[in-house]
Amino acid sequence: MNLFDAEKFFKKYHGLEFHMTREDEKLYDEFKKMDIPKELIDQWKNDIAYNQKQDSLKRSVKHLYVHVPFCNSICYYCDFCHVIYNEKLVNQWLDQLSKEAYDNCLNQYETIYIGGGTPSCLDYKQLRRLLNIILPYSNNVKEYTIEINPESITLDKIKLFKEYGINRISIGVQSSNDELLKSLNRKHNYEDVVKAVRLLKENDLNNISVDLMYSLPSQTIDILNQTIDDILLLDVPHISLYSLTIEENTVFGKRNVQPLDEQIEADMYELIENKLTKNNYIHYEVSNYCKKGYESKHNLGYWNYDDFLGISIGASSKIGNNRYTNTSSINKYLSGDDIKDEDLKFTNEELMFENIMMSLRTIYGLNIEEFNNRYNVDFIKRYKDALNSEYLKIVNNHLICTNLEILNNILLDFMI
Image (cartoon, rainbow, N blue to C red; front, top):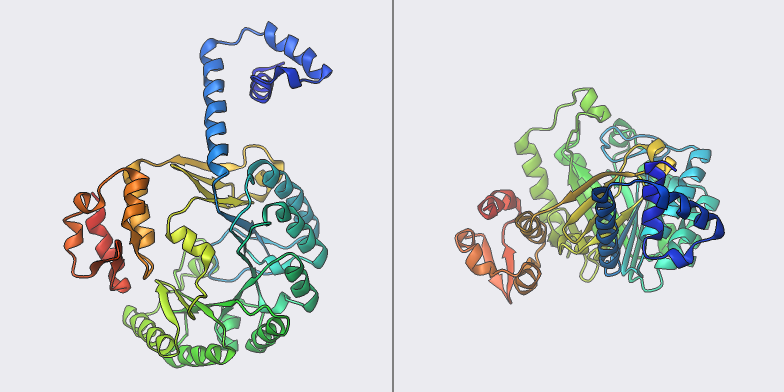
């Protein structure tokens, strides 16, 4: 038995020797004969205590994110963790996901979000297996979302979603302009979007969110205006709008595509704001609009700075003071050995700033009483100088930013 095997053995059976099999009892005899430094044994005990504490915290987590990394093609702007679809690779990924879920999912979650990638690019059998992996943790779910692309949704898949309790669909649309969609390497056209929304509504999946993008290369104000008009005709209760950010490792980044002029982007933002609010959409978060009662409960968990668990390749988790990120390497993930790329421990000061940053993104703001209890501080006293901003107000013990467009500037005053 080498030190690596000794560590695994010790962590598996420390304090649980009476659970050993006969084969493990033989290994235990080998272990006892090893001359292991006390400092190393103490470190292993600390690791066990730490993992037990993390498991305890995981049992109180309300939000689960599952990342499906596979796509049939790669969009030119995409910087998310993605892998081109391959049937064999998907099946191997499902094997590893099943193990990761068994080891880490220790709760019944209030919200579950299956994102990607493109979850709907999986075939029917693979989707059923994915949903079966998540099933044991979905008994109390209130909001269960899956992302889809318009060209890869079918009636059979919709019926499968309903069978497993999925009650919210997020559709990647980006634009209603077919030429613009081609320039992004999207594989659907706007007619596919119309058909997908109609099919969902015909099957009583009405809680639909649409993702759109603006400030795209070659996109004009008129093209954006037409897209907003087209989406309004679909009558969906939730719309997310994201300004293009060109990352260097994307196709756009490698082609040195330049962003639109800042003034054009500002004009686009104003157009979006005016048209959607005039049509009874609530601008409830920096990038999100909804009809009354249709906020994303899962994303509100992020913005309220709740703990969350993320599983699969590239997924992140926030548990207590710790932030974990899984490897973005499909080969490393499939190996099952040490799949975490990052394991960061945040200070209270870092956590407090992140909490403020996330909560001020929404019109509901930061719950001051919860903040004080969470960090054992007096929020008003600690941040009295920052609270002098004319764009901040306190309503019913919630700190609210009255101008989300300049939120980043406001946050600078909280960096103390």
